[in-house]
Length: 538
Image (cartoon, rainbow, N blue to C red; front, side):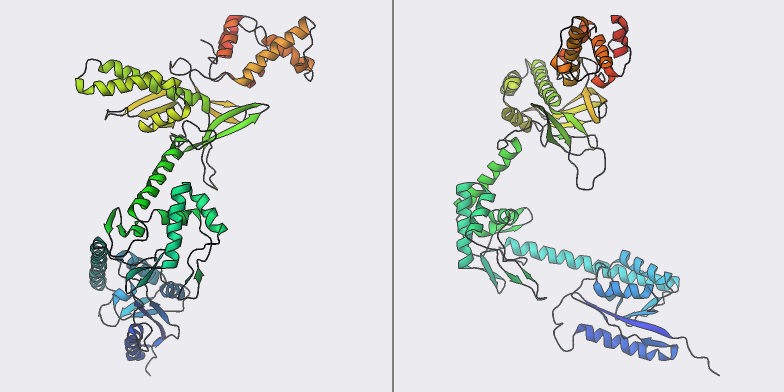
């Protein structure tokens, strides 16, 4: 008795790179499926039978695996619905060696295989796998060469000013691959350019268009999805205002070529608008439009290389400024916080001092450098007296970068007429003040004076008020809520050494000397030498 062959479920996979011709009654996918079905029928004696599910990817490239039918097919292989994948040619399944390796791995894990009806090889042998890899190598080579040829064709066509597809710009229609002016939309385009030239503000132009109920073009896709028909947004309008297509040009990557289509606006109006954009970008970079510009915005980064942004806190009537790490939503990493006044003063003083030293070093250099030396000397002499916008301009011109580190602040800038970048490293110390983690600038660097610590200043003021109240009987309203024990502790602080008090008032005390540390010391010695040792004074 002849043993019946084991049943093998075969799935036919078909693919075509473009949608051209798919609307025909008998298309390329049908031809592939018919050939595969005939092959499966010829193997009926081996137990082969086709599954009813259709796995067709019409209009999908073989360059990746993100194809709906292929994804579904591989899922069916994993759950045991398919034993053999049948394709017309190997390149219908994939054109990339890396993707093929992934597919083979999935098939091996699920004891499945695949067959190409026009290419005879056996993937269960090493020679068969070698043959298949060679075929796939040529398929991948063909795909890459085809891609290069298409890119070269697009580049050559755009150099001739031809429109090569993509979203049709607002203000134009596309007919026979030619951009033709849509007069109704073109009027809106002219109005947008003229209004921006007058207002120099995209948000204001957006508001004007919304007030006039002017909307974007409505697009209906083959799938029935409707897009557009909404009020212009700032991003959409910015792209429109910077698109050279409206002056009869075609952009390809970083190059702009004369187009064969007609312009909607004049070159003069377009250039005027681009000049306004450049001026606005420069003003924003320098903070000219900000109510409270910060010196180091866009220049300073934290120890992780993340940009730091200005922030402030207000207590009573005093406002405290900081630079804090700008974090993306969901970012749970440490957030760095740096007092703005100290770091800004340090940067300006460091740049000024370094400029003066370089000018001094170059005295007597060749006459050709005299103008650059003179310019640097003028900047060095006036930098400290400039307002913040002028200082930001200097830092921008010098391409300045400030990096916060755990033990130092690194500063890099390039003075005018000097190719070599100047690098400065200033020692700092990481200290904890309450719940805040801060970098304090070490005294003695000779570059900047720290701001006095407001907590320490208030503590000293309360100490002398407590002495007046406890020793001389002069009451103070600021101490009305303090306990007797705390008043005694404050009174002891009034006996700090004069040089320690002076250092606190000047902001030159040790960087880790905080109000909390002073209050937690317990019994403060009356001996000035012992005080200096306890509080970290050398």
